[in-house]
Length: 182
Image: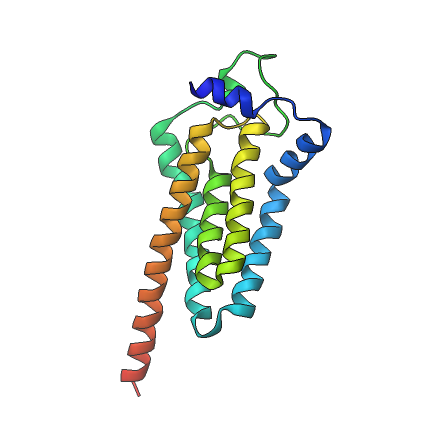
């Protein structure tokens, strides 16, 4: 069933859709979105600015580092571009021959989206839409299975939730110790 869904999402949608999916999957696009999220936090974070900046950094470290160093080696699932016979799918973007579950593109974008949601709801909705587009693009360009991006979305959201809680705790603790030290 998953292979059928992969082929449906990986099908030729035309040059414009292919170009759009390659852009969404590009590393530079992640840098642009991450910089935009940081700007949103700096401009709209208000009194929670330090907490949200810390949460942003922690969420990405958790999702990317733990995803790459712990989850992927533990699961060891092959990407479709290496698992399927050549010529049976479309491969439009580069991918390294490492585990595919979870999709770290999806995880990182959903982590950023959840932190953005905590900063300002409207921007968070836009960020969630971008994250969903990136998740779709990873299947469309042929480098992830649909369940990889679903797992990545859940992983990223979980990392952001943990990072937001930890940042709130750390900033609150630092503030209370600063007040008691006076």
